[in-house]
Image (cartoon, rainbow over all chains, first blue to last red):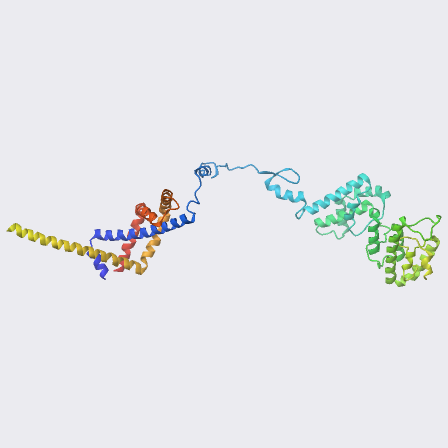
Length: 345
Length: 118
């Protein structure tokens, strides 16, 4: 090749010179590239962006001593403390998040703990006063059965309650082989506790009239003799007869509505509050009339007998609304039968 | 007589050496052109440039030179700096700052390339 001949013809110094020339050429190219870059950053204003002032550079210089990390801190650190905004307590930072969950009542487990606490508070209050707040007791009555007894029986229930602590109830129910066998989850324990409290509180007496009516409208409501609890089945429950239901309604709602026979009764006057309950119980009766025509004859007789003995005069014009005309009852609630109904027969 | 002859002879010799020098220079230029074109055609020049860039970044030459650039810019003023100014200031410094190891490596590569070409 021509090149090789030429190279060989050159002496070594010349070759070195040529090569050096080529190397310098390449270096100049790279330098030019750098110049372009610097010039561009000058014009864009990014040339001095990364520079910090000497003072902060001195402050944040990397520490290179033994026994200390790069920031100059010793390896062991005391726990960071923080103050809970809710309860103003000093807490370790690592425990702050779970504490805040419980404290503010949010998060998965906090609701269980809160309801358990409210149950306990309720029980304590009952023991103290013998009567809980009506507001709280609403929570407790979401369960299956309600017990019968009013205030007078609270003492007896208190005794029962002492032996009926949640712990003991748990074990007793387990032994009974009820639905609480198997794993006792938090929900089931709470359910138990909720179920326990109606027993001990002494029931529905603390419900308002409205609530009682709602219950009686929707459920059978007959109070069992041995457990003292209301039946939660529908109106057509086979275990209880209509007369039982009527009796219960008389008992529960009749206290405010029944008057003595001896008192002179004005025929066409009635207390405003009564009419509503009467109307509602009549509606219930109307409904049950349609559903249980077979029962009506037998109960008609019994009702007419009992009620005619009881009531004489108290008429309510509203009662004539009852289209069926069965003298079946207003008995369930009021116990105030009138001849008006019988007239329609 | 003799001195005249020697003069003429010397003149001749001078003339001859002058011509060889000129020829050599022409030859050198041709040489350089040939080598360059060979490097470019095969793409060896680009590869060498990339190699050089990597080496210079590794050895810190680039940061050094950039620092020098910033000083020049501060001197001349940010608003009035031109590419030509920068190039004129930086190029000689750049050549001087390249470490010998890098230069030697590059030379070696070129020699190998040239040897391969033949």
